[in-house]
Each structure stands twice: as structure tokens, then as C-alpha cells.
Length: 381
Ligand SMILES: Cc1cc2nc3c(=O)[nH]c(=O)nc-3n(C[C@H](O)[C@H](O)[C@H](O)COP(=O)(O)OP(=O)(O)OC[C@H]3O[C@@H](n4cnc5c(N)ncnc54)[C@H](O)[C@@H]3O)c2cc1C
Image (cartoon, rainbow, N blue to C red; front, side):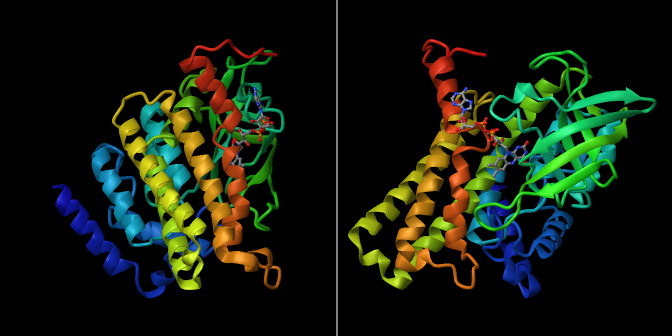
């Protein structure tokens, strides 16, 4: 079965990542989301039509219900083919599984087919100027007005909001509630007068995340996932999906970058420098260790603190890869030709964000210190 799965996928990728799609090889990903965006969207649709997306979703929801092992094979072959970064991952890997676990049948039939068909793209509206690491400080509010929720507040760092049709928003629906209580998980259409998206220009010169302003934005009353007031639990489940099988997709990108860097070092002679050779070797070993750790963690029902260990390890690893890329490129890495950055300069600059998003290093260390090692708790405000 697995052998067939691998062979079929390999053959499909070889037959389809060609023609106009050939130029998508190695394209996209963090810091490079602007690359060939429309064509990558077409590619995602092509994958979906052929049944190569939403593999882990149950069959009754339009997925293929394949095992974790087969999903691993998918990511391995996808990387080996140097296929492009996906544009639909927030819907496919974060919201889809959340709706399957917590959504009503109506929400499932309204949204899942559109995610499957890559007809509607999603973004994640959690962080706010006053609620990042301390997410329970969310202050965006939603109140009922007739048949609608009316949403007011500001989100920030919302990745790909400028491309998204919908946003899953964590908002305070019980006035006067505090911390994790009284929050709800709302599905909000992005293309309406009450929603304003302002791109944030990053170090890389590109804008992948945004400020999102909700000014009396509306969504229907039945657009709450889970119970009203129970949004914290749903939001945490989404984060657990983000840290689950989806991390294998992330490692696909890492593998692609490392392979390309080794190739560059061979071509430009940097490989002859013993220090660079050793760092590349260490980087390769680091990636193997992360892969083994991810596979071990996935086989557990509740990864718990291991997700924090993974986050710390991959964030450091990837930042170091960015630094190593500059070393391999040599003095040329200091110059932007015509003000434009190349893929290595983008990698270096964007990877500075790795130790912040998805839970910063400091937060992960606190989780490990307090929950695993049982060290005294930090003072809380
Ligand atoms: C590239 C990128 C993409 C993102 N995409 C999204 C998205 O799509 N949707 C979304 O909702 N959010 C997104 N985020 C936001 C991300 O989740 C937050 O940046 C992150 O949670 C940290 O919050 P903050 O930026 O407010 O920093 P803060 O929480 O203000 O932290 C600032 C610094 O203080 C440290 N710190 C904070 N609290 C403590 C503590 N208790 N103990 C010790 N140190 C502490 C932190 O580690 C950090 O170094 C994205 C961020 C980035 C960088």
C-alpha cells in the first residue's frame, strides 16, 4: 500500500510539475510568499483535483483519510520533487481540522468543500498589539446585533490576510470577562466594508503579514465554532493542529533550502572551507534529528511539552541556516543588486522571526521549566 502510494505520487508529480508549472520548482515559503502567488494557487487547485490535498481529513469530509505514515511519504516526495510552497495551508492544516473537530454540520458543509477546492483562502486572527505571547489578553470584541455578530478591534501580524477571503478571529464575546473566559472563535468574511487590511513591510522588503482593523465588521450569528464563550479551547486546538503533521510540511521547506545551500556551496567553492563543510554537515544532522523527533511526537496522541521542544529546536536551527547561507554566499551576501534581495538574503532576514512566531523561545522555555521540570513559577501580572 505505502509503496503504491509513493510510486503514484512520484509519478503524478513528475507528470504534472512541468510545462508552465515547471517554473514553480523551489518557489514560495516564508519570506518568499509573493513569488508566483497566482500560479501557486493554480498548482494547489491542480493538486486538489487530483486528490493530493487534505490527505489526512476523513473521507466523509472530502479528504482521503490516509495514515500519518502516508502523510509523511507525501511530504518526503513533495520535497524530493522540489514542488512549491502551498498557498492553502492555513485552511487545509489549521481551520479544516478545527471545523472537523468542533464545527457544526452546516459549518462543515459550507466551508470544507471550498477549502478543498482552494476557492476560499483563510487567515488566522489571534494576535493583537496587546496580546501576543499573552494571548489571553485579547481585547477585540464581538456583540450580537439581530442575526449578526458585530466585531470591533485590531489584529496584527496576520499572515496572508491580504489574500484571504475569511479569517478565524478570537474575540471577547462576554463583556467584562477576563483572560481565557468569555472568548469565542468566530468565522469572519474579510471582504466587507468593516474590515481594513494594512500590509506591514518586513525586513525582507515584502509584506506577508498585516494589521487588520475590524470596525463594526459583521458575521452571521451561527459563525461561532464551538460554544459561545469557549473560544480559548477551540483556539488551542487549532494551535495543536499547527504543531502536528503540519510541521512535516515545514520541514519540507527546510530540506529544500538546505539541499539548495549545499548545492550552492559545491558550485561556488565554499565547500572547500572546512568550517563551512562542518557547519553544513551539522545542519544536515540537525534536520535529521528534527525529523526523527517530529515522527516520534506524531505517534503520540498528546504531544504536550514536546511541541515546545520542537519549536525551540527548529527555530534555532533555521536561524542558523540563514546565517550559514550568508557565509556560503561570502561577501556578495552583503550587497542587494538593484535593491532586490536574493533567496538567501531573504532567508537570512526572515529567519530572524522564527524565534518569535508560533510562541517565542522565552515562552517555550517557561513552559518546559514550569510544566516539565517543575521549577518555581514566574511571577504573573
Ligand atoms: C512571521 C510572523 C507571522 C505571524 N503570523 C501570525 C498570524 O497569522 N496570526 C496571528 O494571530 N499571529 C501571527 N503572528 C504573531 C505571533 O504569534 C506573535 O508575534 C507572537 O505570539 C509573539 O507575540 P508579540 O509579537 O506580541 O511579542 P510579545 O509577546 O510582546 O513579546 C516580546 C518579547 O518579550 C518576550 N516575552 C513576552 N512575555 C514573556 C514572558 N512571560 N516571559 C519571558 N519573556 C517574555 C517574548 O519572548 C519576546 O521576546 C506572526 C508573527 C510573525 C513574526
